Amino acid sequence: MTRPGPRERLLAATTTLSYTRGVGVGLDAILKEADVARRSVYQHFGGKDNLIAEAIAGASTVDLDAIEARMEQAGADPRGRLLAIFGFYVDRSSHKHFKGCRFVAADLGLPDPEHPVHAKTRAHFERLHHMLVTELTALAHPDVAGAADRLMLVIDGLLAQNGTHPSPGTVPAARAMFTHVLDQA
Image (cartoon, rainbow, N blue to C red; front, side):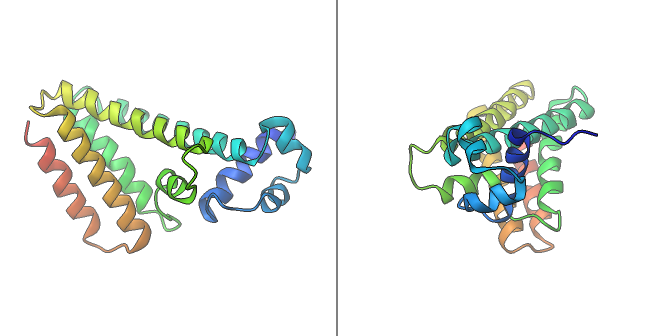
């Protein structure tokens, strides 16, 4: 079995460390974890900022593709597909190593509004919002845009609470709010 190349090792190390230690993780830690030379970062990404942005984009693709797969498994019913999205986040936030939403943490951890990570997190949230809008439209919800925004808030709240101070009532409360929004159709 061949070892992944430096680019892949850098992305894997950055994806892991930027989540477990935050986006402010030092380049030396990433280089050590990836077992690559410093020049590899500049050769493949042009610098640490772009490396972190690409790792965030990769994590977004993995998550959103997994959500789409769950939606497909749920079938054609838009309500079931929306509940599949919620189920993904329940499962994700219930994991014992869950530390909160990596995309929100990245935005909060990088105050420079021009940092390339922000474009990647914005694209992530826009794609998720679009998924919600598509299913709410198919559900014939009377307030598609407002409902999508409310569902995003429920998801964000679930992730924040389970990432900072989880309790047994978090998931049932979030589920009740999520289904309440759906039932307004």
